[in-house]
Image 1 (cartoon, chains in turn brown, orange):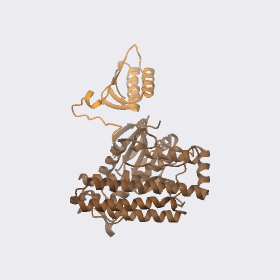
Image 2: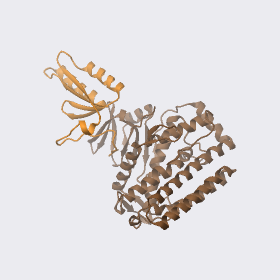
Image 3: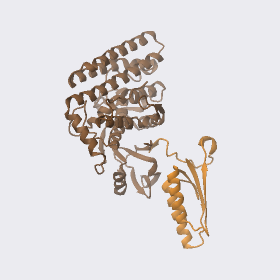
Image 4: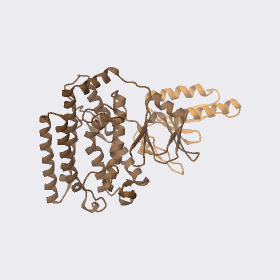
Amino acid sequence: MTVLQNTLYVTTSEAYLRLEGETVCVMIEDQKRLQVPLHHLSAFVLFDHVMLSPALLGRCAEDGRSVVWLNRSGKFSARLEGPVSGNILLRQAQFRAAEDGAQTLRIARAVVAGKLRNSRQVLMRGARETDDGDEKEALVRTAKLIANQVRKIPLAEDLDTLRGLEGDAARLYFEALPKVMKPQARAEFPFDCRNRRPPRDRFNALISFLYALVLSDCRAALETVGLDPQLGFLHAVRPGRPALALDLLEEFRAPLADRLALTLINRGQLQAGDFDEREGGAVLLNDKGRKTVIAAYQTRKQEEITHPVLKQTLPVGLLPHWQARLLARYLRQDVAHYVPYLYR
Amino acid sequence: MLILVSYDVSTESAAGRRRLRRVAKVCLNYGQRVQKSVFECKVNLAQMEILKAELLDEIDEEEDSLRIYRISEPLDKNLMEFGKFKAVDFEDTLIV
């Protein structure tokens, strides 16, 4: 049984992490700020310029602890890679599936179905919670349109058609999403379409950052299970792109990232002051905002849910691990289908 | 589970002072110092056995004493904290 261990986030630049016995010490300006026994940690997420001592790097590589560096806005910049491990037979199965058009399409369909189904759930939940009759109706209407797209998925004969369905549904979804936001928050979080590189409004900045956090968890989950995070099915292979991690991310975008973003906004936990505007119209979370978001994400990961396929309770933070395992089971032909995580 | 490790190590001799340092070091690998000779460690049963064995290797049972308490859940009911020191919950969100 996998145990959900903690992740240490270091957002203070110029911090230095070193190994001391079986513990990691976070040093800031030569002062020991925090000392944590390694047995509590399975991952480090480091922002900007955070250094690790060679001894700590070596230890993490050896134990398979994930170490990821992100830039201020949460964009991936580097990660630590230890010796290639895991099950070569599983990776071979993964490569064979990627060569096989029919199997690739089957996995890609499951990925898109999971994504659309879960984004539809977020809209339906918004519809249940709103008091405004017109908006409720609009949300239900969009949810129905997305359901129609889901029905077309089995008919998609190739990846391009499938990506077309996904794109159309995503556009509908993001058009409707502002209606899930409380009316009083909408002035602070104006949002009409998804944009990135760089995000041009606060909501986009927020969800981009959350996607980066979930993606790094997906990637770590795939590596733990022994799959190659770079070889995807829906996402084409490109140098440096974690295509399979992006595939896995799809089913979690709406329930883990978008829903959390909306909750933070609706509860007033995030406000305009938590974001900075940069030259050229880019908007980014600032230090305070970033800490609020990380804390909320960590809390969410501790929450327990009942997995619809496994019928057992597990913390939200282990969802990527279990989905990666289900994918591995499918690739090894232990089960007939890959079933994405379905959010209720 | 949360355990409380407390010890008295005789510091009369150089060997005793050395034992004191080494006992503290072992405890730090599993938890955090909450008072001078008191540590709180969140461990599972296996880790607790290893910790116990490592501590017994360090102390001199003729001279020193070691006590390990297990604190039962729920911790917010069974553990009270006063004064200037606030322990870090290693299972809570860790952001520096």
